Amino acid sequence: MKILFVGDIVIYDTQGFTISERLKELFIRQDIRVCNFEAPIANSEVDRKILKAGPSICQGKESIECLANNGFNLVSLANNHIMDYGKVGLKNTLDAFAEKNIPVIGAGFSFEEAYKPFIIGVEGKKVAFIALGQAEFGVFKHDKLDSGYAWINHNGINNLVSETKKKVDFLYIIAHAGVEQIAYPLPEWQTRYRELIDCGADCIIGSHPHIVQGYEIYDSKHIFYSIGNFYFNKKVRTGDGEVEWNRSLVILINTDKPDKVSIIPVSLKNGIVDLDESSEFEIDLKIRCDLLNEPKKYIATMNVIAEELWNKYYRKYYIRALRPDKADINNLSLKQILKYTYRRIISSIRLGNWKEKPEINNTMLLHNIQIESHRWMVERYLYNRNVEENKFL
Image (cartoon, rainbow, N blue to C red; front, side):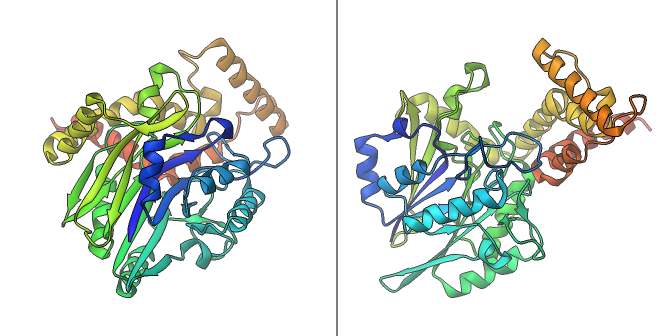
């Protein structure tokens, strides 16, 4: 069985979704073509968004038509945006894929449906796929809920992986986790993904950071921490990494030769996803892979990144959550300051007393502490700072 994996897909403009002819030829030769469908089918003008921190995104039903026309026949929904428009968005998405007879994994209207592996048998071999995401808004943590996506750190996952592997010859995990737009995975994810390999997974295909991170071979099994955006046609300012945003990896696996995994760099340029043969991409990927094999340098690099992210983002996130009356507005644009002031006024009105401090922003606080990647990054920075402050005591 020949299997192809690509990264995150969001198609706002279906007219612009184009895969090059030589990439299509590669697709045609595969039996299973897998992607992560990053946003639900919804109408942003009509359908109601859930209460969350961060953007809510959606795409039209035509995007599924695009996937079907390009041969995708297995889709992961275990991601942080699939529940952005609640049950309506999830139902629309499940119904639309069902119409095209494309199986989906990683989300559903029952605990069993969300966590159920997809198993297929070909020529006497059985292959299973499990889709899992980090704990963001819409995560299906408890069976008392009635909808959501599968959580990678649920206490039953290790057993699910080991029990599924007993029934199949090969097991592939599609993981959606990490910190957005940084070049390396958190060490905690390295530990977790290796643990999933120990439980029986044969390969882990990661996404969510929106850029390509390094990969490694652990116990003769490949772990791809993030293969990037296959197609996410959002306008990104050059300063925010436009080139990085639009390049990704296509992973090819042949179960007849499971140890030989093919890694194909691709990128979106001028509206077309095509093979990327640039030396820059090759060099960047090698640097990111090499660092994972140098533990001391890897940890030192992550410590630097943690401090940078604390100063740039996380400190403000906690102020915004715990002391909305003291939120740091330094370095904000006039538009951002006006928006912030408006939110403070509305919050005061809701409290019914202009003199009272706005209440804790529970939604923002949940965002800060529930999402493993953000919590781990903040803990890393605060721990390191505490060590520095105590080293002379």
